[in-house]
Amino acid sequence: MKRFFVIVSVFCALSFGLLSSGSAWENPGKPPVFCISSGERTADATIFDGTCYVVSVLVITDGTNSAKLILTSDGSSGTVQFETTVVGADNYGGRVWTLPVQFLTDLYANIDGVGASYIVEYVK
Image 1: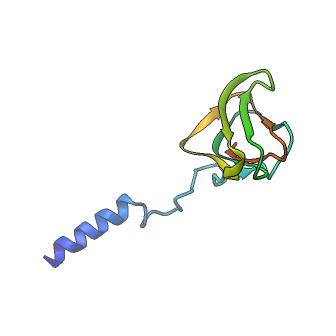
Image 2: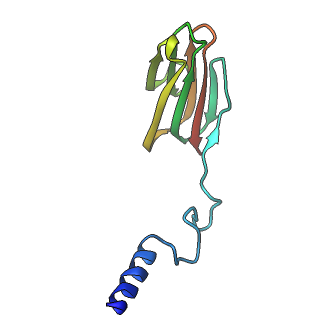
């Protein structure tokens, strides 16, 4: 029984990468992959110029007025990839993706609402 436990333990450790030579974030030949934050923004802006992957979005209201955020690719008049409205009394809302959303040419954010702001986290 002890031998069975050891075999199962080693199998599980190998399966979950606990005994591998590198870390879970290792990407051979490239730097580690981490999210980049846009920082809190209050105006429309190009968040990233180039291909990137959006991981999460947080929309913040002033507590009274609703806020609407639209994320597009190809600039301000490009393809809408995400849109959300947060009710003012909710104070904040957003989305976290299990699998990131790809923006092929750029990542542009359009925010509407008095006192509204947003934070976008992405991987380039």
